[in-house]
Amino acid sequence: MPSGAAKPLAGKTVGIDPGHNGRNEDDPSYINHMIWNGREEETCDTTGTESDDGYTEAAFNFNVARLLRDDLLRAGARVILTRNSNDGVGPCVTRRAQILNRADPDVAIAIHADGGPAWGRGFTVLEPVADGPNDKIIKSSVRFGGDVRSALLAGTQMPESDYYGDHGVIFRDDLAGLNLASEPKILIECGNMRNATDARLLTTTRFQRRLAAALTAAIVAFLGGR
Image (cartoon, rainbow, N blue to C red; front, side, top):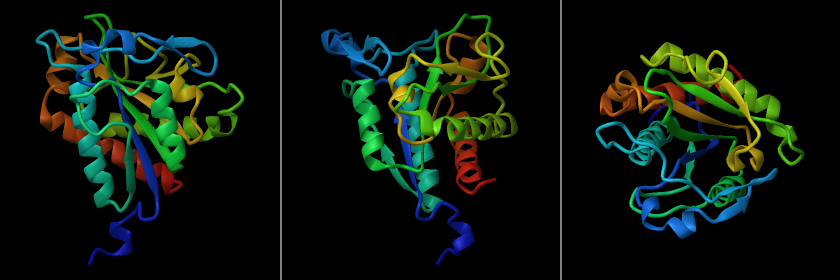
């Protein structure tokens, strides 16, 4: 039987939100209807981006989420996902926030990949801005974001973004998933799917496994108080 040291996340709950969904484009009226994100209106969701050869962000997000879930389960965590397949529509970003909040996780992460300029490379950690309901999770989310940034730099081949944010970090006040969070939470744009170098990494199982391992390391560091 594994020792306590081998289960560093025993007793912890982690939320994972794999952005978008594989069939969002099939129901534009649903995906494009407006929701209130805590500060302003935004669409329920989007289809996400894709690489030049058609590998979708939704598939990437879900693959990494499953790998991360498996790593976290092995580390002893209870894991909540906001969707359990990549062949559905939605849920809306507000519903995703509700799913995570109701599970009362110790930390949560939204997994994405960006559709930036073709010349741009790298990952960006998106951090919440205090808006009242999420005030109590800002400091802890910033700390978690720092752990994620450090883990990606140490454990993957993906550099900090050279086109978005500052040293791989940006604060966003226009995303429901961050505005409505009641647990420490960040969103990670794992790389730029429109950049050929990034796309070659993002679309491989090898890199996705390394990314999941790095995110697991960041979660262990955060929940273990470093």
